[in-house]
View 1 (cartoon, rainbow, N blue to C red):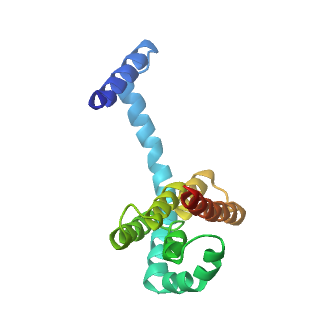
View 2: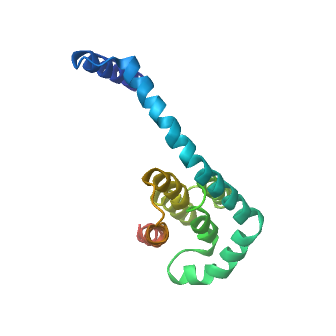
Length: 168
């Protein structure tokens, strides 16, 4: 049944546009045309985020911060094995997925660490990617406070994720 959802939705939208006397193809092309300037305005922000993420990982800063912060994270209930995941998730979804896969491979998928890692991965967002897309569209330059708040919220979601997995 689910394989019919998209075609049925497409048909409903098409019929609704005919009822409203809107030319569907013209409306679609107009929307696509207005998306091009937005995509070009977002592109430099995305490139900078991808480059900085790769530099963070390749420079060894990610490993250094993981080792340095793991005792502090441990005090808050985040196991040291998950420190790298908590640090990389705000920067890179793909990097976080790679760390998550490493955790699954090393510790199995049913253990406490893997459950915590899964909840951390699912309960946080790639803060810098979202900020790049959002702020490029919003045309604002006041980025620091929203990013700091998002990073703090992401961190506390990780702490809470480990707490929930510990009591379950």
